[in-house]
Length: 184
Image (cartoon, rainbow, N blue to C red; front, side, top):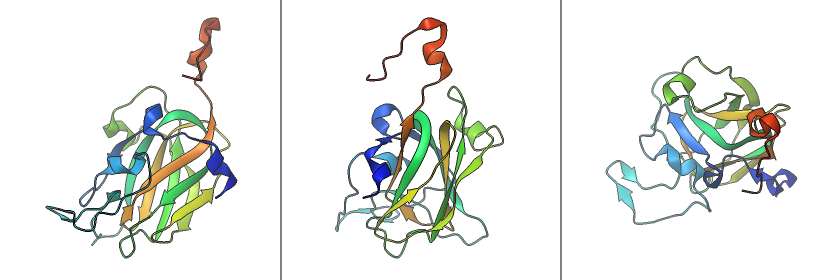
């Protein structure tokens, strides 16, 4: 395992991380990206759309472009590495992925995040992925970020997304001499 995986998962649901928007979730819901624990395989499980898969899965694209999901980090900070886990996705995983990052205070609505509000900057350039694997990729944001946009090319399934890094609380946390409880 890569050294950065020893750092906290900034996107953890336990910290308040959430997938707030996605352009497609035809086969499996976006919320599964941040589920705690390893992805599951259920051989006999089916939904009204096909085989049940533990992760976020989009339909096949018949037009140019790519699919995306926006994640609000539970703990803003500096990203040191990501894990794009395609476990159990063999023929239906994305060929490549990239990640954009933004720093947006407060909790803006999903419509603004998927529109023109944030200034998205590249965090991870388009990178080849392997199927049925935990793709560990080192990155260095070099700046505090609050939201990420996972882009998959052109489509497919991702079981889990982990975003490892260092927590950097907002300045408001300590404004006016207040003490913040980082252990909480």
